[in-house]
Amino acid sequence: MKLQTKILLLAASLAAIGSAHAQEVIKIGFSGPLSGGAALYGKNVLSGMEMAAAEINAKPLDIGGKKYKVEIVPLDDKYNPSETGINVQRLVQQHKTAAVLVPHSGGVFAVQAFNEKSKVLLLAYTSLPQVTERGNQLTIRIPPDFTGYVVPFTKAMMARFGKNIAFATGDHDYAKAWTAAFKPAWEAAGGKVVGENPMSYNKAADFYSGVSRVLQSKPDVLLIGGASEPTALVAKQARELGFKGGFVVLDQAKLDEMAKVTGGYAQLEGAIGVMPLAGDDRPSPTAFTARYHKLYPGKDPSTEVSLNYSAVHATIVAMKLAGTTTDAVAIRAQMDKAFSTLPKEINPNEIEGLTDKGGTVANTIIAVVEQGKLKGQFLRATESAKN
Image (cartoon, rainbow, N blue to C red; front, side, top):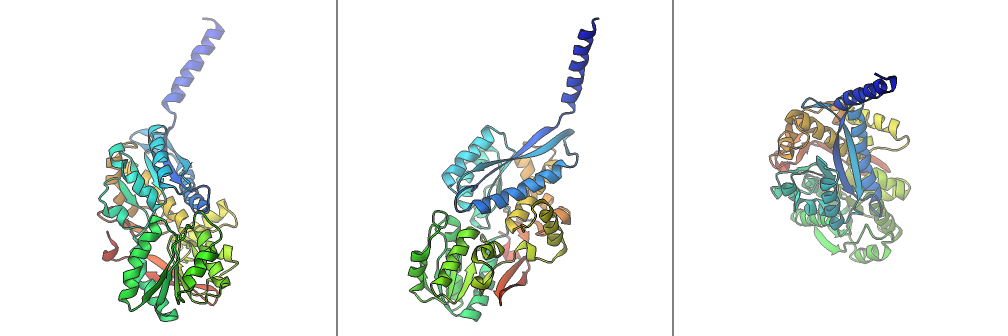
């Protein structure tokens, strides 16, 4: 046999061996805002997912006797639900994604119209309780139900500032759900809603006219919220127009990111919202923040970073438990166990598991801005939040 022939046969043999041991790819899709007013929010979510994938890929991953690596496939939907639906169809059909993550309620609802039929696991990053109340069998709601914040936010702000509140939130579905839950709770506590003026947070940067309109009702407190950057602008412009009351900040917006836009916490004095992860001094959040700082020097992780980081880890654990990377029903059946058994180092928000309907349960910390600093208050997860 000629030398050239032997070399060709050897090359073919080595190629066959390499193919037999080659890693297969688990693709997890993402459809969220990577441009426009909510771009920072979407990029934070994506960074958490990619951080998790990098950690998983740093170690051998074996599922059902095959070796895998994890790939995050991101598509920009500009916070537009119709674009989300198109993106997810593309992710499923073209990229064969095992699961998709969508970080806004409008997009989640669009995908829920077909994800069960398409046999794709939907990882929904929204604290809107209706996402799981719909009974979609292939949906996981990643953050805890936001309604757990309503009563403590109401008590704190009413005691400190007064009983008149005006709503100046975004006009997207998530903000509408917050106002629908907040209004009766505020009124039940003896308060009054004196004004409502929802604004398009994701399409504008100048909110002076809208804020001025709502301030004419002379509120003691403003309910504001959407993505962090436009929410901060609403607060900043309210202060510039003379508002001296408090802010109830929807959990979608992050106080630390808002402070970067407002030039510190002074203009956010009296605000109440979710404690930034970097301000949470529990061991798991502290360790996670340190790891994130090594990857992104000078940038603090937000809860959308950490929660979606954990969601990717939990999805891969569920695949291991199910012994499959493609059967969405089998993977979904293992997600409660996957979340509840996550090691502390990859569970910085200390998620305890899932409710029967597929929402996460976790203890949370809320924060108020007092004298230019964040002050935390621990909220324990309760059975009433498990829906």
